[in-house]
Image 1 (spheres, rainbow, N blue to C red):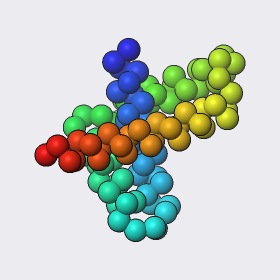
Image 2: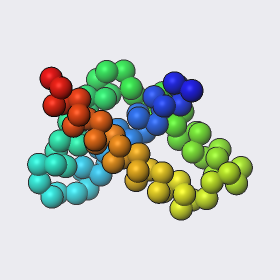
Image 3: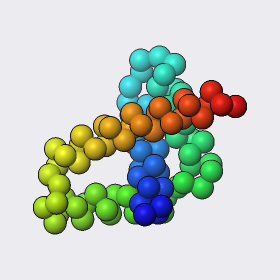
Length: 92
């Protein structure tokens, strides 16, 4: 279960980098990029990203979730990832 959670966080780190690179709306986007870099630097990297992508693809192909449900899950996960980063940043 922990591996799945770590994989999802790694996946959102990659999504955050992509979103940051394609959006230019100020400092918040650069904070997201910094959070993604921190995530990768702490060991949540390629394996976690591949594992989370695999889980999502399997769930969609098995018909457990639809593509729209996967997209909503990604959006909610990205928000949770940002909130977690801000809370962690404020504790230091």
